[in-house]
Length: 309
Length: 279
Image (cartoon, rainbow over the protein chains, first blue to last red):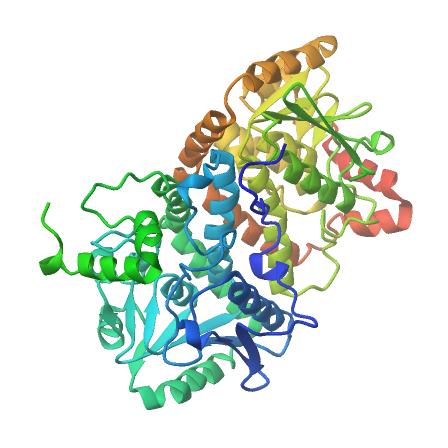
């Protein structure tokens, strides 16, 4: 008897998640792959009408791009960017049931073992971006929210426009919700999580040390490619080893354990009981639709307008 | 799925994975790893399986990595092969992630060990939650004798740093009684009682709710994470990388050269002879 609720169960990580995404013969749609030059590859999130919100297909296409960049011996650096008006709006909350992005509805009544299969896959795929053996640069403009910010955080470098907007929404109301990500406090001891919950501009983020550089919109592409080409001068194996050393050192500061507890807490948050005055994603979505939920969340996230207890 | 190198069956809430290359003392080759993955992927989400027992057919649990060099690129990398740091790092990650995956499998696992339990076979027994062995069992990892890294960080957590160093510097083996004494295994029983002892334990575990077992296991394993085992796996990858690329000393025993010239048995003989009276 297989486990409960009809999702793919998969916890084995002998391969990286991106190694499982085949690029040969792929029709890249929701994320595009191209080469800026011999040494620099580029992945473009390509659902501009959905503000590049993550569907399973977008993840797969993007991961196939990483896979292709990995296998291409000429490629030294990969740039990640978004098409349209922003880098990305995070997980798509209106994805069909059964995709990784939407939270699991409690009515599915999954077992703990189901959750392990689901959460380990969902959370561990971020680690495989962090540990990608070539250099990655996120080129961020416009909104970079939730899962999109996580994707950017997992890249080695972030270069953003000054007016880019980083942030995490979750359930709103100063609640990390289901998009908690344990590593941002580590990028800078000034960028504590409490700050990152609210929206942070590219300029502020650069001052906090959370990203590497903020530039005016019209210089973003040029600046990112300039960095990529410079970094591409480094010897590949030296970069691989150095990156592994840095990431390994971060592990010793506790990132590995933080990621571990991240997916356990992710699992735990599925059992949250909402108080009557709190925004309940499932209930709000059921009663008022996704837009209704977002509106309610926005009102609640603004301290002055939150309903009194 | 039909397996060639293992068998998988489930009975009374217990999943049995049997390493099944008895003519090779269950030496682990690429296909066995693949089939082990497949069987565990079946067992883990199967709500009818409360606990997984891993054992070996024939005379031994497993002698470890298949050293023949045929169908073993995933199991052991020949240091003579020129391979980029990046590709090798990926291979090491896959290897250690497999051990981590089994270690964290969302249900209890028991290794039922008899005879040789060496190298990767020993790692397999170590990543199981519980190891029960018969009196004739032998544990150890002789990789250092081939100039390779005995890369399982769990040794340090299980038997302590002094014993780990003694064993891994020398490639020496432990008897079942010693393994029990140093907490590498849970319990040693007479050979004719092994099957029964494992069954009684597995049966007992199988009476408990699967969700409770998964959560309990994760609670215990998260303490291991907090003590750094996750980071240790990663650094094992790196150490394996360095070990593989180091320059050989002049006149250093080269297992792979000897194997290709004189055959596998002669190479193992030559590998182990200098250590006959050691420690």
